[in-house]
Image (cartoon, one colour):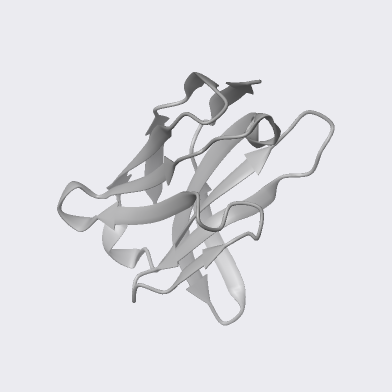
Length: 119
């Protein structure tokens, strides 16, 4: 099993930056898919950025050019660098790391971290 601990959220003004971190422990050798999700009040959780073990990335159109997902393998830590933040980026951000196998994702979730962007 994989355990995840998130950090790095906070309050920032529009145009500012934050970096989220997601440290993994446990069966980290099994991880081949990683992602950052967010959930705003009254909204469904959505995938913001994804990364495969092979280095393939995915970004939602709303964050392309502003957010960057990366991983420090030596530290078993996933990052989300968020630049030029907008009020609509306000949400609880969750990381997930796990195994994508035969069309099914088996992943662990972080505890969530609040990101609030003021206008």
